[in-house]
Every structure is written in C-alpha cells, then in structure tokens.
Length: 149
Ligand SMILES: *[C@@H]1O[C@H](CO)[C@@H](O)[C@H](O)[C@H]1NC(C)=O
Ligand SMILES: *[C@@H]1O[C@H](CO)[C@@H](O)[C@H](O)[C@H]1NC(C)=O
Image (cartoon, rainbow, N blue to C red):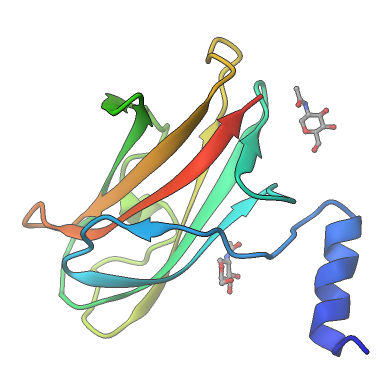
C-alpha cells in the first residue's frame, strides 16, 4: 500500500512534472552550511540526464551556519579529473530562491536553472556546485554525476 504522499509523488512523476527522488550527492567540503537535500527536475533516474537544448532546475535545500549578506554560486564540470568552469546564467544566490541576508540556523532552498547548451559534448561528468558566502567560504560544496545527452 502506498502512502498518500507517495501517490502524489507518483502522480507528479507520471505527469512528468517532478520526480522527487533526491539526487545522490557527495559533500566536497561544505563549511558554513549543511546540505539536507538536492533535487533536479527533470531527473527521472540517476545519474540525472541533462538534455541538450533544454534546461534543468537544481534545488539545494540547506541550513546555514553563518550570517551572510550575500551568496555566489560557482559551478564546475569535472571531466577526466579537470575542473572546467560551467557558466550558469544567475550566479547570485540571493536571486536564486534565497532570501538574503542569509541567517544562521535558517533553512533555505537554492533554486536555479541550468541551461544545457546544444554545443555541449555528449558525455558523463561530475558537476561540482559551490555556493560561497560573504567571506568566500563554501556555504555548500556538492558533487553529483550527470550525463549530457
Ligand atoms: C525538452 O523538454 C520537453 C519537455 O520535457 C520535451 O518535450 C522535449 O523533447 C525536450 N527537448 C529536448 C531537445 O530534449
Ligand atoms: C526544493 O526542494 C524542497 C525539498 O524537497 C521543496 O520543499 C521545495 O518546494 C523545492 N522548491 C522548488 C522551488 O522546487
């Protein structure tokens, strides 16, 4: 028997809206925040597939351990051990679902879209996503595998 919440998830899933299976990630040195959950939409199965010409929404839920008036995202693609800058349209975390100033002990959802350009190569890679605080410490640093198709 499915619990009602599971049924809602399944329904959203079948509608292709959001398959709320949290993304498996590794923490690569979050300093001033703790990541609770990472969601990518669409991502019906993992590793998440990023479709060229489409965009994916990344949603990182975290609790902050510091006060910070601002936050800046830095994204890299790790390909064969090399970290290559992966530009995102909005680097300002405070314009990505976070209400700034960030306050200690508060929970936030960092939500941004990742356009997948058609000129990207069709490869599997690891995405390293950092959100830096005012002192350029990582609020969070997460890594998760993706496949560009
Ligand atoms: C982009 O996403 C839409 C809706 O999910 C889908 O219908 C379309 O085929 C996708 N386009 C590409 C290039 O993957
Ligand atoms: C982000 O994920 C959290 C946790 O699953 C969820 O509560 C929140 O509604 C999501 N936000 C958006 C904009 O998708």
